[in-house]
Structures are given as structure tokens and as C-alpha cells.
Image (cartoon, rainbow, N blue to C red; front, top):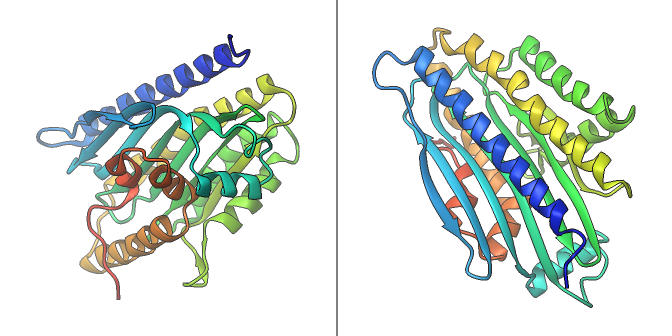
Length: 286
């Protein structure tokens, strides 16, 4: 029997893959412009999930602009384990007890920069399906070790533009959600300067929800590339680098302790290297 959502799943997965290709090309383009030697390039590795599906893990290390950046795409399916079912049920996702099958596809990106004045950044967009519901999630947040208010303003303006084109309350709602979600309780502070975050988005209009998720993905490069280019050539000191490495420690703590995507990926058996690609190459703790 054909699932009426099959064509929608295929459309979403294909679009996430296309977005991944465009971002990889744009980041390699930055390396071409600013490298004085051999520009950084992504190493692409297929990933598999034992119970079904897989994806592409694309990681660049040691570039002129990027110290480490990962751009992952996945399309996975199977049966949710008991812990994942309980987590979904706690969030109000229907049908978990009756039929714990799932399908998910998305793109996940984390960039750690060479220059400590250039901000680290995270972005992801995804679609998740169960027999009882189908929804979207995602967002993007900026994580500078050395904050420039004009960079923060630019980044948030692009996120606001993506939101405002779809609903007048999306930006305020999803900015507040990001501020709460990306807070590090044991440190009593945010991990960065925020952005937007949303999950379980199912308004009853799949096309509108997909269009909004596409808008969030489309906003990423205009939000981030100008900042990476603006700060790449800024002179920095050893104190600046120290601040960057300590901030990366905060980022690593958050991703390992609190991040929902990290927990879900590991609990559902996805490739651990792909799940943990968000971790910085070098970090420090005081």
C-alpha cells in the first residue's frame, strides 16, 4: 500500500540534499578566495544506519577559513526504540504506542572558524514522519567567541526575514525558543547570541510548513557568509584564540549534554561520527 506521504518525503529529502550541495559549494568557494595555498575541501563519506537509511557526512578540516566544518545530509527510517518513543510521546507526538515506525530527513551544519573573530555557526532543517504525524523542525544560531553587535544584528535580520514572510509571530516565537533551547543551565548562560529554533511544526498545511522550512534554509548563506568574509582577515592575538577555544568548550558541553539532535541520533543508531561531527577540533576548559 502506498503511503500518501511518500511523495512529500521524497520532495523534502531531495530539497535538503540540494541545500547541502549548495552550502558545500559556497564554503569551498570561500576557501578558493582566501586560501594562499591549497584551499580546504570537504571529505565526503557515505553513512549508514543499521535499521534503515543513511546519508552523507561532509567534513572539511584545516582550511584557510574553516578550521572544521561539517555539512551532513541524511534520510533514515525504521522503528523508534522505547526511549525515543517516550521522548516523542512526552512532546505530544501522537501514535507512538500504536505504531512506532518513523522516517526522517534533514541537513545539519556546524562550522568552527580559523579566525577567532569569525563566529561559529549552527544550522539544521528537517522533516520527521510517523504514522500519526508529520512535522518540521530546524533553525540557526550564531556562536561568536568575540561578539560584534553588527554581526548579531545582521544574522537576526536574515532570520527575521525568513520568518516574517510566513507568519507575523514566527520570529518572536522562534527567537524566544532558541534563547531557551540554547541556554546552558550548568553555566548559567547562553551558548551564543541566538537565532531561531522550532520543532514539531505541523500547522495542518504541509506545503506551508515545508515552504517555511525551505525559507529558513535559504536564509542561512546570506546570514552567515558576509560575517565569515568580514571577519576572516581581522588581526587576532593569542588572547583572542584562547577566548575562542574556551568558548568551544562551552559549545561542546552543550552538544554532549543537552542537544536533542545528538541524543536522538545516538539513541536511534545513526553513524556516531556523523552525529558528533558538531564537536570542535580543539577546545579548552578553564
